[in-house]
Image 1 (cartoon, one colour):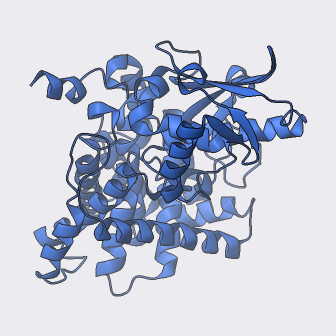
Image 2: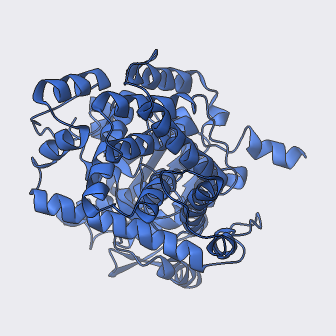
Length: 458
């Protein structure tokens, strides 16, 4: 399975990559399949069935709205988030869904949008879409949203293949041990090896421009988070804090990236809070590698770029490439899906990725980069995914800020060493996978355990 940096970092919308971005992509793919089969004009009704975690927390995560937007022909990287609610209101008042943005079909919310308390094989995030003509089924397919906006259909899931890209990379690696071996053998930094692999898909110029676009989207997300104030949607009455914190920090002055003072850590908190408040509000996002953990990687990169006077666009490229190398390992050998392994797969993976990226741009050897990622992930093992009310707000927003600071500390500790350490990144990733398998389902993005029920009991 060949995974690109642009698979891990995708522009989309909040509040969830697996519950919003993935389902919207799946529905858009379904509409595309209807068009290819020349069934679009014959379709008189569409049924949506959500299973597992998509059903349990789908309303709070916006899964129902995302599927509708996908059926209307929208894609998460192109849709204007501000238009979702008006179009949903129009659908509810008219009872008509514009399939592919053009064909009006009746849509009864109770009849056609079903949230079912059962699981399908292969993955907890499952959905089945069915196109109907009169009284018979025209076309039906089941999709699995496997984390980070990745989507596979029933056939792919049954085959065990989670990706159709069979590109042969010059430096393919399936473990951190293989990555380090390749770096040593070919005298490459982690970011250099990743760049060579990325050139299998696109030119170096396009890679750099694409990563600049990703970085700009991350910056825009922070800027939007600093502008907006008030209460986040969803009913928990969670107050946005980033804008007020920003005003307070502007009065303190600017710390130096090397000093890592308490004030600098407050700026890191600020960047993470801004991103995840925007995510919770359904704004424009970048999966990093998921939406629930989307604030960590941008916060650490903002920290480096803002407070290091020598930072450059090359640092952005190298940071994201090195971070992606670790994300690839987490996805290949465990999971980045909270519904599959808990929040250790989302926040833990993002923390490890950010630590690796920061170590890379601070001049770390490949062994130190691997060590930084190992520290970041090791100290998030066992982290449950238990969002209160099914919303990506509590504890998710603060959790990103804490993990961003943890990533910086992990990079600093690794840079103080020589890359030799007791437990390898491969061992920690394998432990994350096994811990996720042992974790009770109620702690894996169902809002049926942990903080999600404790807040109600109190």
